Image (cartoon, rainbow, N blue to C red):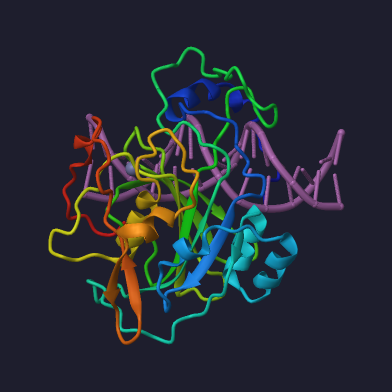
Length: 308
DNA sequence: CGATTTTGACCAGCGC
DNA sequence: GCGCTGGTCAAAATCG
Ligand SMILES: [Zn+2]
């Protein structure tokens, strides 16, 4: 709204070439073709869920049904065509063990989506600036633009009841955009991992109705360690969840990620941690053994940054 | 002074 | 083909 007139219409000259740097791995959107399904589950239950679900795809009709029960998620993913299935309900109220009393956060729900396709080169070579396009010899022919193509990597979202957005998950993020969300008074922020070699992105937004809930969506996975992890034994749900994302693709260094997120997780990386009465939370180890390449040292950070 | 955020414009996919 | 919308870029502003 309010774009009355963009006076500067000529500014778009210089910008394309740069993309090569940031997005070396241009691959056309794999477009999950709707294949990206998402599963939702409430924290009340064990969260190994994903492994149990086994990644079934449901017909759209079914999805619709499920959506009826949702509120925020519904809107969020509806627009994106990702779907969240399963049931979600706010936990009555659990004494969150959040490390920070001032920042109470509770996990409310989680969901993940599977991209489809293959993947992409998670490990692309950025050094190729000349031919950004690179047009892979064989591209399906679908959506492929002249140089810009994005692969939709698996996504993983979860809701957290928190007063502050942008929860600390152990990684450093740089905000690169913010957009207003339709039907919601709250904007959505886009973040990207500060590691130049890392293409992980993250979206943060508040539920349109319950502004007490923050929805964080991770896309892709880190190829490096987290900055400061459990140094005091404090692990936030966010961190744990974020770690789960990594766990999903153990070695995927370029492969595929064919299995749904959580699949591997449920297998053996998930640890059940008693969380209140009858409630458990799943904690995953943050990056079990990612091959340390090189940009790892980069992560050194003051380590005591406030939640930003 | 470098890193990060802010913010408007641009772009691509999809629905109509 | 047009318009809407989500997502991204990049220049300027701000932070530390
Ligand atoms: Zn990263």
